[in-house]
Length: 301
Length: 301
Image: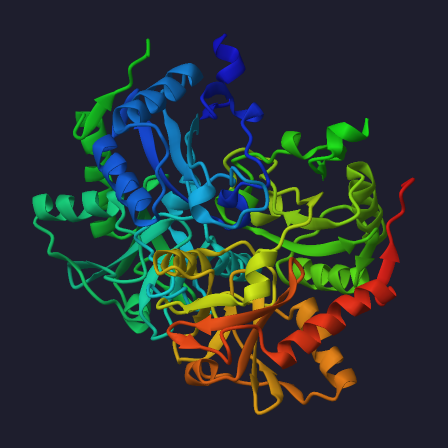
């Protein structure tokens, strides 16, 4: 049984299926209008990390976009456990998605005619920045296209509308970089495709106050800075401050704390992950080994 | 055989299937990054309208977003004919979609590792604004959230990133309106969810030069204005000019030329479709009855 699910397990339209069989309709407004919100939690050595925080944020995203699938929070949590259990994986990337659905009346364009639904899946661990690149320090390109403004699309609602990120990734790859950081129209740093950005300058850590998701790993980083006695703030970061930083690192559920070594033409420090970044990275994974913020995966779920 | 397809026919992953069986993977970046482009052509009384124009625009959209599914233009065209033929429908809404796909290497985040693919479907005719609402004149709400800027997401590439439109539609429905018009940050009119906007003032027609798709129906409207001797231009339209217009109408493949009767609190003319709008609407459908821009659906395709 387990082998059918080892590539990943999904819950969709009320059934658990191997990830390869999971499907959504091309008529679902979650696709044709990108009218969906999602969240991703990770499982490290058989334990979810900060599961409640992810469920909280997912609930806010759904409420903000008026998405109301029938599953309760307790049911969603049970579904996530079951997806992971089915895969047999110790380390996993676990997604939960609320989809607008399709109108009950064919051809209707009324949002309230749609039956919202919930989907989830667990797949093998994914690093947004591959581990070998994390080790040498990521090379990050500053995208020339500006981030979609917060006024148009709320970046704190985790969404799939990645066109600005994708444009940045094309530029990054064209120029031999690993990933991209996107700035807003006014020249302030926002975030990158799937991660928050942090700068370190004169021993102080700062992450942008705008244009970005309220990352759960970002939250961990800020808490860890407090514990480590490193001053840290959520505050504006100008593009020139990014380029002039002593260190830069990224934070995401799918990869953790990921130091950078280069920003566009600028080589940071010794072209290697910086010491403050590495301290925070180490503390982040130590939390995992210590079982902080851990929820054991229920294997017989 | 035909009855299986009467609700719609799709081509996906190389096979023709009833629309209810058409599916995409929730791991496809076309979904998880809204990394897809599309186009919609309509079939009126067994003939495509301006099929070549739609195929041209679709090709530009794909090229701009570096999407390269394996099907040639001729193959795409043949697939569209076959989808329509399978449905047996005389009037149809026909979509073509290029999807980023998934990385061949699981967990890869490299765009070039994705196998792009092509999907198409034909379903029964859809009116973006229902016909009875078109007849009385649509009531349009001006969205309070600004349109995503062109600099961040190119609106001439037909895409599914509708968050700003969806926000506008929520507001419209909350306030008892039929649909929404979205303005940009600087107060210029752009477009609405699935349609271009036109104003008529002192006998002159104008449609925005920014923030909007280069609509094929828009193109028809501008050509028809030329034939009817109505001055028409693509030029900036300020929000106050929209509210102060003599007439307003919308243009889209899925509905044609659709007059409005109200803009927010403003009642246009006699709270009915205006005479210039109706002249253009009539000429548009007359073109259809005359077979202008028509490509017969190949029924034995």
